[in-house]
Length: 194
Length: 226
Length: 196
Image (cartoon, rainbow over all chains, first blue to last red; front, side, top):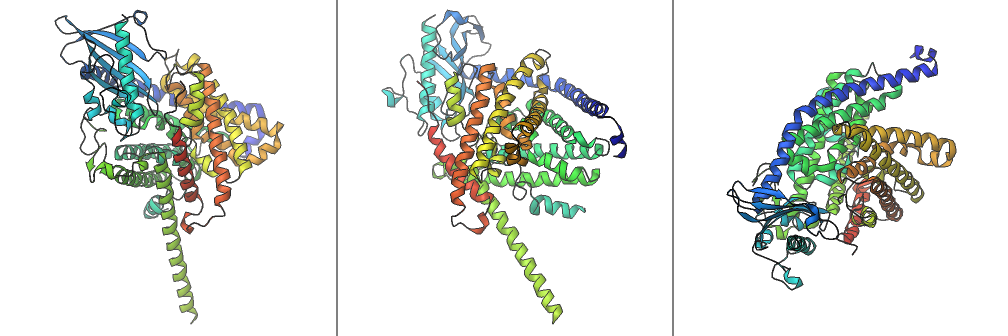
């Protein structure tokens, strides 16, 4: 402690800065190594998640998806459709469309994959990200819940029973249910506009 | 500092959340399922122990003026390592905890222990301090999770027991139907109130034990005077 | 929120719908520690607004022009916390020289803004939501305003609760937490609010 008082102020600051830099460099190096190790598994997981969501809404093995250019369909005001793809099965027949969407639910943004068949009838939904309340809006993300199971088979003009249609909303989660149904309609409108 | 004493301190008398009142943000935010609670608890335990050991190792060679900056750098380094490992190998936990994993960097428990303990104690004691404080933290998280989940949804072990699609999914064992639960406990208000009651309980327990000790000391004094 | 959130959506979300304290739990430690008196609370709130806004701006620039081009995304946490620590240090020096009364009023709480979950939290959320520069700064400043609203509300209530009759075990933090919980319940009324 006594000899630090002898050093000049400038030299002391430079020494401190160098020590800090050295520690930071060592840490950055270690992190670089860990990053390399974990990059592969992380990418695999993200790709698997997307493939699983697509498989959930568009049944069939070996489907191909061809992304449609964003200018070829009309998106809604908030640009909720992030990706619209035409789906063809393994033998090349067109089986419908799959859309990746991000829209606002009751508590935050919901990221959802929607499948439509050639007659613009919903084949299923898969919610991949959300921050809805568990027990209420989060039920929409649970494949075993009656609400997402009631959506396939509904076509253009689908609405909640509260709004004059036939789909029963999740009790206590009208906002989330309405947002999901509205988004399916948005995708149907987008495909109609192609 | 013997180990038994450290164990008792970490878990009860100097519990990081209930007594030192540190690290409350994460405690209230993520304790909605047992999976979250145990996952976060063990992540903090590992990070705390590693940081304690490293800081204790370098405590004699780091200049005093920049020690806080170096602590923060070391902690941030370990948090990033754990974050990357979780994203790669337990992605369900990483998604569940969200932004609260990187926020472990500013968890006052870790910086607090580094400043208060590891600076002045050898590696062995620091290692055990990390383990026991981490255990104390994990125990509080598990208590909060179990209470909030049981009273809120009537289930136990959400994400760990009865998983439907790998670890992190599923809603656990249902003890009573979810409709009879107080759903409000799984919301932010539940977090605040449950933690408030737990701290009050701890303060009551500690006060009672203090009173008992004081009464016993008085008795012995009087017995000695007689 | 995603990258195409409008400014008004961000403002309302940060202050009311997803209030940093009552909804997202970011910034609880100073919230509970500083909220016993209204003037300390207000001072702390202003300091946090300032730090959050500046931190959002600087961290966005660091991320956009240094970390992303060099593929160093994994160093985000470290880079952000370093920026925040240095920023708070400079704010402290600046306040000491120009507004010494505020500096002495804030006392120990000013360096504690470094460990405030809300500051690092808002910067991380800006990255997660892919906000552009303007959105990041707006989210930072209004997040701070939400924090200030929360802490001032809490201080006003706590000044009254101090005279109330509650069990002895609840002295200190427990009664503050229960109070905060009830205010959080009130704020839940804002959830689902949309601007049409």
